[in-house]
Amino acid sequence: IKSDGTERPAMKWLRQYLTSKNSFRSASSGNWEDLNTWEEYDGTTWIKPATKFPDAFGDLIIIQNGHTITLNSKDSVDQISIAQGGKLIIAKGAELKIKDGNGVDLSVGGIIENYGTIKQDSTATISFQDGSKYYHKQDGGEIPISLWASGSTIEFDSIKTVSPKNANQNF
Image (cartoon, rainbow, N blue to C red):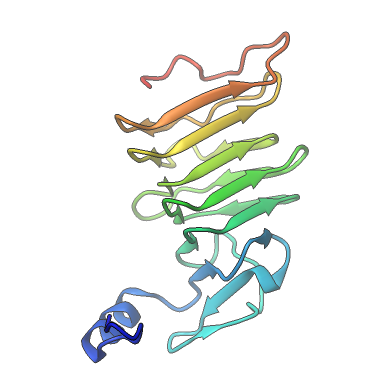
């Protein structure tokens, strides 16, 4: 990237080569269900607003640095990445299902705040990177079965009577 913020031709080519059609990235903070929250890659350029919501049938989904995305409904996803400085909030009553596909199915470099439900295919891979955070903000529920890097953080809040399931992981 040049000092004026524009891309060098080789960098532009590499970014486009590595980005598949039907990939999504956050364009701003907002609700998952708001098309204006997302940009969609059409194979040549990023389209805003997206023409559909990210789901398990698309390609890569990226929540970018500085963006907070709130899921208020039920959705299934695969190949989702939360960049360092990005945040995903799963609202009370909402459900995010992580499907198994190629590679890591959910990679967290930023933050997840879970007031709702995270489900996953039995073979889905969830990875929390060094510096990432998972906030379990409910009584009971369950913690996603994940790979927890050294330096990742899990924090419990609002537990009153029921311990969350899957709390016996190697944190």
